[in-house]
Amino acid sequence: MQPKLNRLLRALAREGLDVTYDGRVYTVRLQGDSHAPPAEVLLPPELPVEGKAFQQLAALAALKHPGGGRVKRVRATPDFHPGDSGVAIGSVVHTEGLVVPAAVGTDINCGMRLHVADLSVETFLARRDAFVERMKGHYFFGTRDVALGSRAVEALLRDGLPGWLLETMEAPLGALARADLGQLDRESARVYLGGALEGDPAWAPTGLRREGVVRDPGLGTIGGGNHFVEVQRVEAVLDRARAWEWGVREGQLAFMIHSGSRDMGKHVGNTWRERVRAAWPVGAPLPESGILPLVEPEQVREYLRAEATAANYAFLNRLLLAELLRQTLRELFGEVEAPLVYDVPHNITLPWEGGWLARKGACPAEAEQPVIIPGSMGAASYLMVGQGNAEALASASHGAGRARSRFSMARGGADRREEALGLTGVDCITLRAERRIEEAPAAYKPIGPVVASQVEAGIVREVARMVPLMTFKA
Image (cartoon, rainbow, N blue to C red; front, side):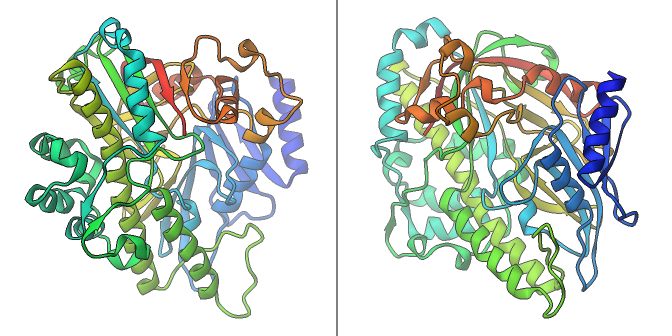
């Protein structure tokens, strides 16, 4: 290990980085910038090191603004990898006096939602084809009947799920007229922050701010990239007391949803990318990284309100994806409760110790809080419980992390054999053949060491392990 590590550290030094490794955590800093806090990366030795991701982390730690504020700490989770916007996926940044919109990006409140159902795998698979056809209609062909009154939309964007639910109970429309709204109300306690942030409808695209019935094309949709809806089997319960408390049992059916704010998040993120650039002091040099923070208090407040608006939309999007699936289970198998275990965000900025904590592709892991860490569609996923580890900024990985880019998976020279891609036995439902290849298990790091390293570091503890039965990819 030592000779290989020394070669790695020399290579990173040639790229302008000062890096040390204690066998568990890498410490990374730009050379010549001793005033910046070092970025820390929890990474087991068997997982690959990506120089570009290290560069992005070090640049984030070195971020400054002529108007003040500072970056206090930067931490990365073991699934970290380079991000397209200059911020590595898996980054967690603690700031004081400034916020960094790029540290969240455009996929605002991308997150995970997990349900379980007392339905055996054998019973479910006996009607697999009927289930798949119905869900393809909902997720891919637009047969979902997602309609909201304009007052419900306004309440959602302003107050989150509680406001939306109050208005929806008055006059449910479409698929929501068939939903158990009482169950949705009870489940709001199992959504991070209750699914309620302080937003402002003025930040929504004009298509959402119309009178009468609103049929937004993004609500109840999965999205691209690594987003998915997966049906799973609870393979093992590892903390029986906690699992019992959360309603999780071995042999249950589970469904896991990974999606975000869709075009709503893109609208907010792109709008503020331009606003942040326009707000940069005239004549001040731009950071080489291209990452620009906000420091003026009113602009900070307004950005956070806009981000919260998109986050509220994402909470409802995941709820609707789950409700469409839950209603389909009930159509095929009778009264199936399929309760929510938890819904947790990834890409979001929240108050933290007198400043702000921005997570990009990282999961909150506060003490006693459920944490959901998915593997690839050919590997196990994990339900964990957070330990509130301050060293890790109370954050865990949001998955296994990409090992290969979508481009490298899709290019003509890539090995397309099922076994090489890790797709043998994988039931992937998608309308795009390239999506199945881009998101194949071979594109991802092994989930085992990613999870084990976080357990060993005292960030999370295992509660249950699920294995995939089928995965929907848009």
